[in-house]
Length: 228
Ligand SMILES: CSCCC(=O)C(=O)COP(=O)(O)O
Ligand SMILES: [Mg+2]
Image (cartoon, rainbow, N blue to C red):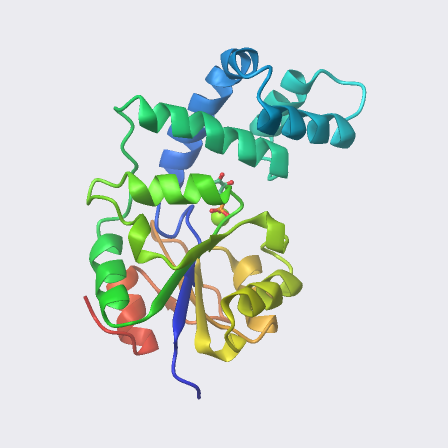
């Protein structure tokens, strides 16, 4: 078996409590959408995303579509890009600190210090990922990552997305460990040839097809990574 060279982690439910994303970040963006769109009515980035919203949901006001997508937890790319921009303003205004499972920062620091290449992969935009790791209670963790991937490489439940991710990282899939709480994502990563470990938060039941661990130190012990 090839030694692991890189770790790719999902966020929601893996590094970051689901409740923070669903009960804090998503409602914050939902509430601010009307004022944000008004304040950015001449912003070319926002206008390009709104054009994509109209293309995907023709004949409906863009704001209505964005709120509808938010309520359905849609992973539509324009929603994710615009949410990321709203969160950037919220972080910039101060007062928004991200939740992160306490075992995660020491493990990420230990793995990066040992030379493992760290990446994140989320349906959230790359900006949203950098922001969430940049505003953790344990400090700015964003510099520990070599890069972030979002749905530009494809949906997280399709093996081809993980193949593209490996190409983007310049590594054979067998040298990459993918961490997630989500069984379908783990299946897709494994089909693409990556090693996988399910991260089981909140006493979730393990799935049979993947090794599982309750936190990042347990992942390290199980997968032969440096232990924090
Ligand atoms: C990057 S923070 C916001 C995460 C997000 O928008 C989301 O939809 C969660 O997706 P994930 O792939 O991390 O489960
Ligand atoms: Mg998820």
